[in-house]
Length: 84
Image 1 (tube, helix red, strand yellow):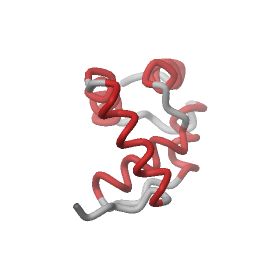
Image 2 (cartoon, rainbow, N blue to C red):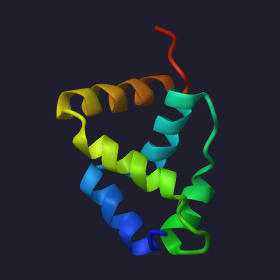
Image 3 (cartoon, rainbow, N blue to C red):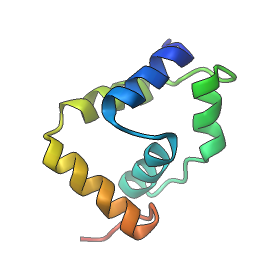
């Protein structure tokens, strides 16, 4: 399991804020990820699910243009899934 520090570092490496992760999860899955949950991961109050760390590793490998486009889309839609 990743530590809270590793999670925070990975978010920073990805150029994401906690709220960005919440919006991306909602946009990609249609499932709401409460900011309080992400904050608990970041502060060590809850264990970071391994799948979250794996997803962040994949996010880092995406071309920057795609990451920027996805982030701007979630910002415009308030994190809601966008039908395309």
